[in-house]
View 1 (spheres, rainbow, N blue to C red):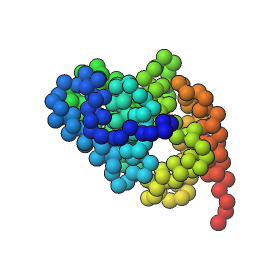
View 2 (cartoon, rainbow, N blue to C red):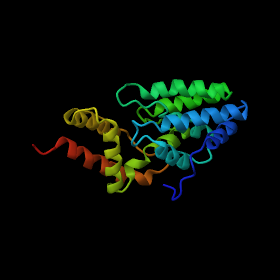
View 3 (cartoon, helix red, strand yellow):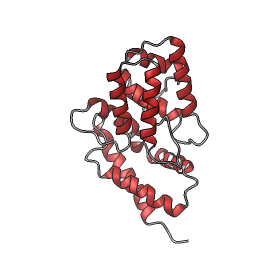
View 4 (cartoon, one colour):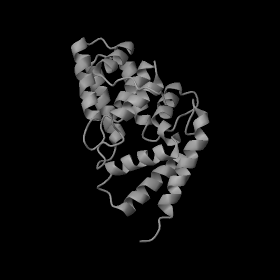
Length: 210
């Protein structure tokens, strides 16, 4: 990941929205950007925070449509509820409409937000590949960083008993391992990520007895 993360500000959202064709007044873009940052700063978040948002934005770079999808992809994050990606897509659509982003752009952004529910990218989907690679980049982190990531996600699901956590987390890991490719633009990350996933899965499915 980039050594220095660009600050997360409402202006950063506004710049992406403008580059994607937004025509609403600056005050509206600032208000929407501020709302999104507030959502990404909610107290139930330990991994899906502004830090994760900023890291993904840095990775997608100068791609405004994908950047808007990054801003929206976990805008709704309630670990006690289902369908967060769909709820995030709906909210993102409403906010981008307020910004007067062109309808075809909104449609593409929402497609990308929904893609993060499973991270399955079809051949030729450049935007989807860029977003998925950014969102999953943490999986290829050095093992100590990966462990901290898992601990942060576990903290978000503190309400879930350990046994149910192990079952649910194992299901997520297996679904990722079943993808033909985790990375499409950064294939050099593949082997490290899969090794991390297998290592975590083994720890979940071979838990020592109390």
